[in-house]
Image (cartoon, rainbow, N blue to C red; front, top):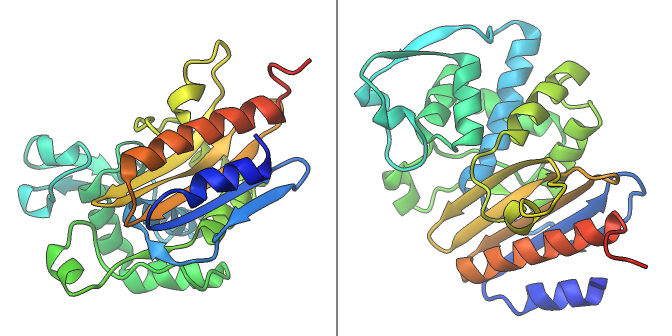
Length: 262
């Protein structure tokens, strides 16, 4: 798939579409409207995770700090905590894991309360990100109705993942641990859709996001040659875009790793 073919596929989609590809060995890069700010959905959880790990690193928060989750803390939709028993005890690291691998909204909101929204945004800004912003908690229908949203860009999300890949996000050990959590992602219907059917299935460290008309998947695909892809869409045809995410990811993986080439 040539760069033009890839971009033509993306251009056919309705709504606001952003895309970023980067070969993590050669630095080759393809972008499509990658700097446009988009409503984040659950991709903002990557930045919450980074902020939590910064607190782990400085000792402000312990990974094994434990707390109980009650029904009053729970919000609907994604995740596991809402469906578990009243007063279940979890650690701060458990909350991060649930927030990422099941996109648990309750876990995310508890972490936002623990750190404070201002502190999370301070850390995001300290990394040099100008368009990524946490403005509300998950499933806050009231603020959402007022037009208060969280924002990301494909380029800044890509930079966060690249820092993590290179061991430069928080610290080398923290970066490795965050990558390890992302590799356990359980929501695999987008970037990994076709890749998981390969004989040698590659590891993928990624995070999805979805809401009405919103679909994202951003991550690192590990092969002989690892690469980064960020697919972000607002006001779009989500099933059509998700199919294209799977197709482009498979094609890139084959081309980058020389699969099926004479």
